[in-house]
Image (cartoon, rainbow, N blue to C red; front, side, top):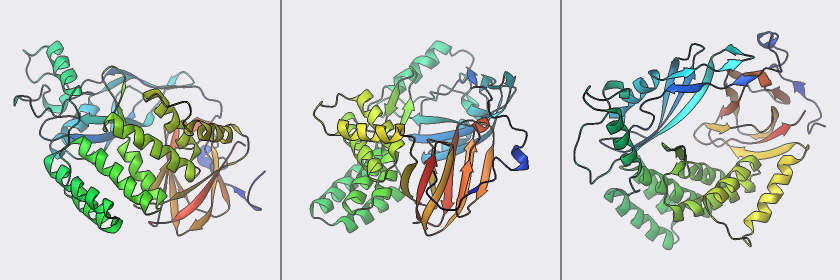
Length: 376
């Protein structure tokens, strides 16, 4: 049963480009062989950089793209060269080696302000010791030590945050937002600066009844990365993180982004002991019931900074109630990228043969719309 009276099955299944695609392919993801520098310690300033890349059918890496959150331009070329030097056992489709696009890794470069000034343990490209006399064990030891650095706020950001909290206490949200935006434009000295500024942004947006902007901000504040032991690490202290995750759950639920709400609930329970009588448990059970239902999933969203990114729960979707302008949808999938021109009253189907996908909805800033996802 569809929500709209008239729908066209969109081009993915019917397009000649997909006429020879099998719909029951077996995927095996690439397996790292040499990813030295994945836990590279930072120097100069701290940084958060997401790297998106392709693992080729021969196990090499190509199409390296950097996405800065906290920038360290001095290291960007090194990070790019580091990832280009990685190698993998190729991913396969039905047993045959294949390119896997849109693979991602989040670098979290941390600085110990009390450490003596020493050159970085990696040579050009971050692929090996700076000189042949340095042992691999020593390199690993330095990296692990860097990873244990406690979170800290830079003095400039600390002074600005105190001023903003004062403005919020005076109920002057507009001036607080203006001051925070000004502070964020100056840049960050630490990854904690970035996380706490975004958490404060979320707080202000919630007070101003702007849930979509608040959700975007708290998503950034609660980003996590993988440590050397495979553990999940954050850029907020535990007290701030627990509050931020609860805020994120409530915001996601309020705009019916139920998969994000459920994932956040699970994340919260894995990290903290949530009291049994906390109402979040009952709220989460309602979210899970919606996700498990065969009925269409409905979520509400808004384009902020000209784009909204979504990881679909189901592989058939449409968008309705567009207030503004949606120009196109880019599907970034493991097997290929697709650019879909927005059309009204259209269902788009993402074949399983494309692998895992993320959707970038692009359009006019401030555009709101509803997404429906269907089981069949």
